Image (cartoon, rainbow, N blue to C red; front, top):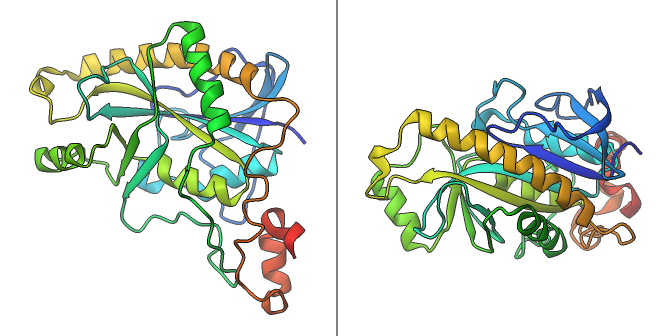
Amino acid sequence: MDAEIGIIGGSGLYNMAALEDRHEVNVETPWGMPSDAYVLGTLGGRKVAFLARHGRGHRIMPSNLNFRANIYGLKKLGVKWVISFSAVGSLKEELAPLDFCIPDQFIDRTRGRVSSFFDDEIVVHIGFSHPICSVLADAAEKACRTVGVKVHRGGTYLCMEGPAFSTLAESNLYRSWCCDVIGMTNLQEAKLAREAEMSYATIAMVTDYDCWHPSHDAVTVDQVIEYLTKNSEHAQAVAVEAVKNVPRDMPSPFASALKHAILTDRSKISDASREKYGLLVEKYL
């Protein structure tokens, strides 16, 4: 076992500078290679694996991310808790640029993205009414308050397809749905983490107001880059504290998420599928 806690870095967060005793490892998965090598090390005495979601240098657009490989790779490394940082737009006035939000719900507006490991022979239906681990969200909220980052607990993350941003009509529609932030990546990660029986929480870092806001047109690319840079600095500090807050002596609350989720008759599962999905389902077969 190489790591206990996984950290996924979003736009602007391509490195975890505070990692000690660091080394890199490439992990092969049944679904290909993850976005980049995992950087393994320690934070506050805890074993951590860091992954740059879009690859270092931001090479992979949201629709092309290999979400299954990214999450499976963390599982293969022994990760039980996943903290995901994500740059987002704000859909509410009170969620200002440089604020952090820890949403507890998602709405999926993506099209055709794969969000399940189980694509052959094994049928799985996970419970997903509460997609975020509250224990991990507590750890993240406490970390934000410790380092002085303004944080909003709860809310809905609208996951859109991208790569283009919303039309004004879409932005206003999402506001009418009472969504709080909008991004392009975290819904698939959350579903796959649940299937992998890992705890998952999003720390959404606001870079700008979405196009609904009257002052949106005054936002420049330079300003967005400035906010991404500042959010990355804040994320580094939050990550260090959040890792300290993750419980040491308790399993993930979702460590048995698949226990009653597999519908397939075990006798109908081939040896090939048992091998492919073994890391995920072996204890139930």
